[in-house]
Length: 357
Image 1 (cartoon, rainbow, N blue to C red):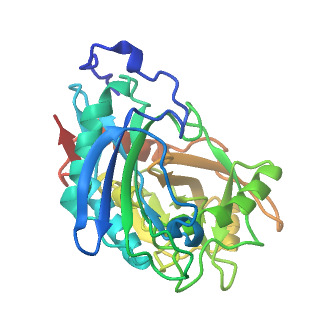
Image 2: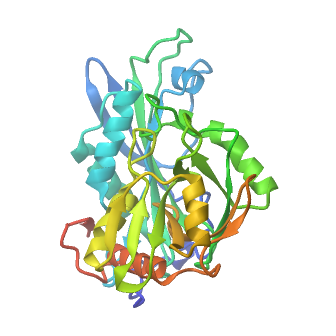
């Protein structure tokens, strides 16, 4: 990938050079409030600061909280662009509806992002592995412990400079199949991005780490056999090799999050000449097809993970290695195509890049 030109800033002291993931926060945030009388109002770009909340803030106690995650990238000409912000805005609206929160209009959502990027892009280096990760969230603010939806809400948008979710190198991760815990149930909230989905996953993630793995793989909650997600990421399986490869991802059943990166990769798969497919895959099928050499590559994807190869699976019914244990050519080609698109180095026929400045 071609490197970007020099930054359009003069204060080099603001640039974050080794950001890691999750705590290299930028300087500003956007806030906005909702009341029944005024709707969404008072949008304000301000310095990042601690919140002052009543101890009985309803959203803290009953998890009436929705959020999103999306990224802005430095372009080849030094400008900035956000990847598919309106698609994230619509998913944010759908998540909010599920937990009885007023929807933030798309235009307000995008405008908040534009304002924050203009204020804080100076933190982003010209390293193409770095990006600005944006975290919009909304929560109920009533000071009440009555078990009911809040009547008032606050929107927050903050950001941090992100490096690689799994480190600097594009190397594979090992995964642990969770047989004891489930991420989502039919009729539940697995297809939306709300805070209540995440803390219950920490115990299974800890079990994966104790088994020597970096991530957990979730199975369906009913039959405990269908592969759903990896941690908070969507999974893809590559069958075959070369131009005849088939790129398969679990079908959306209402218990999987419809990832924006997932959707992007399905489009890029077809554009690159591979065959995209959505189907349910059982964990036994996954194991058997790997041992038969039918499944040659597996990767996870998401805003944070981008495209991350999976090389080994650990399970109580037996462990197995995927392919030769290294990142596969289809995985790497899809990753390169997506990253080039992020940085404006590839055609954007779908208009996914929202350019700023």
